[in-house]
Length: 122
Image 1 (cartoon, one colour):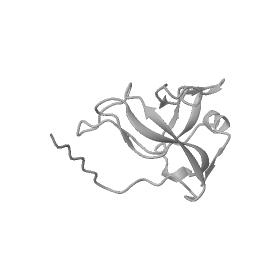
Image 2 (cartoon, rainbow, N blue to C red):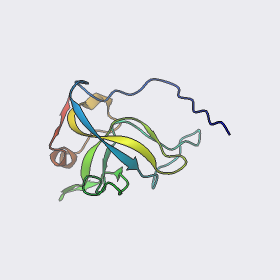
Image 3 (cartoon, rainbow, N blue to C red):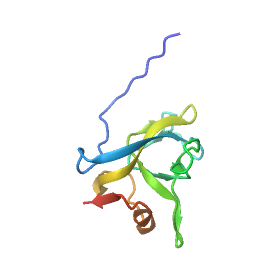
């Protein structure tokens, strides 16, 4: 059986300075992700993720949550990830300079505090 994957559109570039960054290979969880109009579950580049992936590489990354006590954010999703058919591989930005206007949602002040090696710039 031959599987053909088609991509439409351009890659979303979230970096302000694309020559200075560090990514970590992760597995992105499909739990709690809602399908779009075409039935695809796409987590967009720039989503703030956490869940313990930095301490245990077998843990699946999930969307970070924050409250008045802080955030469990560990990085920023580097590329769009399709989790339609289950957890999928992705890249987590753990160090670099991110363009705020290119994120799907602005990070909270708690997220920014947790992401000590990521600088968010306008």
